[in-house]
Image (cartoon, rainbow, N blue to C red; front, side):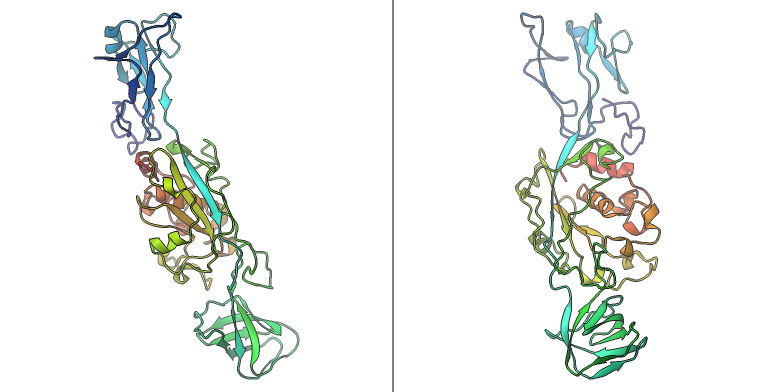
Length: 409
């Protein structure tokens, strides 16, 4: 039947019909005898004839069944938009009584995609240990630049620790850092003395759940949360809480063990497909290419690669290349299997200006990344717009069409 959508991206031929994306477009009649007009079946002792009809697998495809006792009258049925017209050019009603040809209500295909949701185990090792070789004295309210010797030996990421703290008997706020020095501020009311070869712990400002206050500990021993879904990926057909409803798709959460104990890593080491999948615990990946049973993997992770982790946190530059990574899929469509949602950068302190009045959240990121799994692109706009510039919650028609024609995510 004709697609009832009014947008020409979804329905480019108006009310002509034959808009289905699955094959065969008209669906399949079976358990009956083929005829020139469809098929026929004998009635039983109760006067009831039964046939089977199989719809296509593409979400949003539409069908209606016409039936009658005189083949020529059934064969004369035509279509106009979502209406069926009989040979007398009259609309066939869905409430059939004595009409020579009856019709079903319009049948629309809905698809489920089955999501397995996991998260990384508790944070571990997200800090630097070492010694401060020289004796130092830092007066109250003053700054000092300290040479540091990390252990194991390493070069610090420049300015990664801005906003964090250095603990050397006392807690000192970090102002900046180079590869081998840390500039700190003594915010106490007394002078702080640091003996030679004093041991230190160095923390940046990571705090994925914003619960550390001033005593930042980079989420040490805190379990990483599952990605949120509220308002975007709820298991229903309400577009207000399921952004895929406009594409006739609904998520369900009925596969995998949904565990919170996958391998923890502070940063992804790279964005290569094989490496990213090595961090997955995708119990249902055997079905990931199945066109009948759609599966998706979603992992609550900590941070993307170092270059994209938002450390140090800086004001917006307006350059999208400077924006941190809030999520990523494991490959390009159609070869992707799942997505990461990065919990540490996905929090209010790390979000772009004005986020509170825009569709920016971890749940929005999850919806956006799953949009990529169906072939959605940033240029589609709507929810597919990158976080820094996003102003719309829902998918634009071009993304809805991508979802509806995809053989599988």
